[in-house]
Length: 144
Image 1: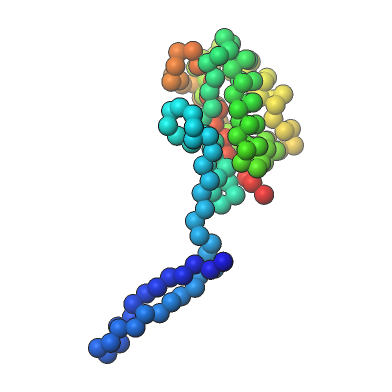
Image 2 (image 1 turned 180 degrees about the vertical axis):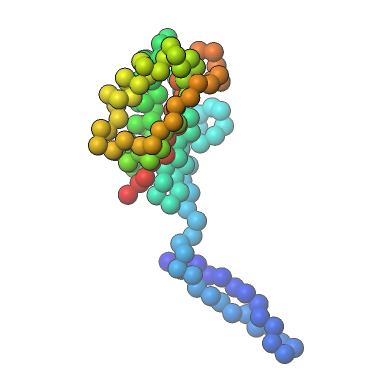
């Protein structure tokens, strides 16, 4: 499909309109998980790239349980967007207490991640949105 672009060009004392056709497709953005709180998208797809918001869990009491629950949410939103963890590009991970929780979180991550398709990743310590939250994970993935 072509996009139609119109421009006005002045010649002598008359105006003419030219139409140019571009091969650039129209902008297409898909938003997923907009029905949950807070009011935001849980995932956005643009140009075959899937951007997930930071996923959290406050139902489990420890970082192992929370990390498993968070990664289940990541799997869910990636599947809804038409991709999976083998196509991850980036991962950002925040833990409440890096000394206490990094090792346990990392064990769950290593068991979950596709060993042949590891994304770039950064992990840092952060005060999260709720005192009950111990880990937050945000990823970006390709979509074929």
